[in-house]
Length: 315
Ligand code: SF4
Image (cartoon, helix red, strand yellow):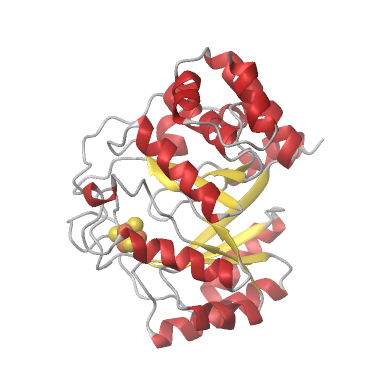
């Protein structure tokens, strides 16, 4: 059964919802085996790496139910305005020394102010000149702003859709799904690579997971971050049980079948779901990239521990 679905994915065919449901119920070992084959065939067996700097934290106008940075909830997450360029430079130098490929400047909020945008532009130019792939995750940007960043060295634009269109009204009520979709389309129109994915374990169904993956495929994003809920005290998701390791691995494998040629990056929530050996387990399920170092408001794995596994994969 899996072999037949594998053949379809290998041929570039979009698998249907019935096939996706069959994968969800399949033997985990076999599923991971075929997902790994697809990854090796389409994106190679090496692990792509990226790291971030939290350049502006908290006070976000949006009400995403999982987010520690929303001003709608009383969380303990740090709140600070856009940091100095020197802080971004220090963080970028450290990840460069460790051999990480990409470095993203991340800020909270739906869209940067003109002053913040000037700092983002400076930071992109600086990071790019250091020989790192310079990325941003700074909310929705207009086409003109995207082109400005591209012209100073932006390598990719990150903006998550978070979940399916059907489930989105349960996740965020302060902006529309189309605003996010349009931001992705504008970046692609500007000729910029896009990194766009979602968060899992927030109450969405397998149908929602399938729907999001299909949309990402249709939009043509090149990289797909996979985040798992790490419930934050003070948010509506406080106390929610984290996903079991096997369910998280099934999500990764399913996404590999639907998005065989994209970079699937395991980002936030990895340590909440996988208490040990998260990089190896997610890679064995079909992932092809991992965010290393600290997350936005949560400490990550020791960066050198991840790099050891990753270097091993590079042979
Ligand atoms: S996910 Fe982004 S937009 Fe939503 S509340 Fe958090 S920082 Fe704001």
